[in-house]
Length: 263
Ligand SMILES: NC(=O)c1ccc[n+]([C@@H]2O[C@H](COP(=O)([O-])OP(=O)(O)OC[C@H]3O[C@@H](n4cnc5c(N)ncnc54)[C@H](OP(=O)(O)O)[C@@H]3O)[C@@H](O)[C@H]2O)c1
Image 1 (tube, protein in one colour):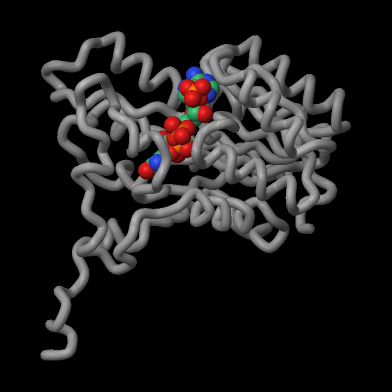
Image 2 (image 1 turned 120 degrees about the vertical axis):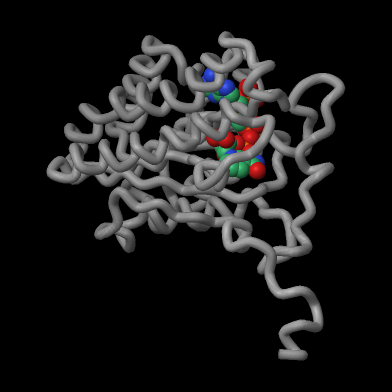
């Protein structure tokens, strides 16, 4: 029960990883605010009702400044304060070359993945100051460490978050607000198991984890565990940090079976 005195806001709180995060914080004693788009709001209310006491669903389209203001206000009114923000909401772009990418699609990816997190940090900062401090986690991606053909808008948006995380960490440290990023590898959620656009294969169909050091798809719980650590008092010295949780994906292929024994 590491989070009994904390109120956590999770954006994209009905998604694959968002659900796992909200559930885990709640189980560890936190008050949890589940942010959801208007489309997912019914599920968010059902999820909050299932968790029971200490859970609240709010409409929070992360691209909307008014939604952010209302969500922060709701957290403070219901639970007294807001101390942890998980900037989790994100969208993948359809598989397209840069040349074929429509400007509107590019801007939409940035609006959700980058501007959404910027607006979140801006909206929660005064509330965290009122609470005496807090922790913000930006969910990035291992795609922020290289290039991926056909996913330039997503890749570029996740790279941008690295700069946002570091700059905000510098600005907010004196307010006792820590800002860190977690970069998941390939995690089994609808972001990769559902087609990114009608007629396109899901990313999971052409991702093979077998060459990597931990040869499996990641689970939301793998990311939740890292998140709970980074937002706990045990991580009070960690700010501006970027925690990669990817089963060794960024390391590149591991030794082929048999080669280690032969060496
Ligand atoms: N799965 C992976 O392999 C992977 C790897 C690296 C990083 N990530 C990142 O991890 C985060 C969570 O993704 P996930 O894998 O859990 O995918 P997911 O199941 O698709 O969840 C994404 C969530 O974001 C929400 N969302 C989308 N647009 C939004 C908006 N404008 N305002 C508020 N919420 C919005 C979605 O809500 P609706 O369903 O209502 O649209 C959904 O709840 C994302 O930032 C993603 O980029 C995922």
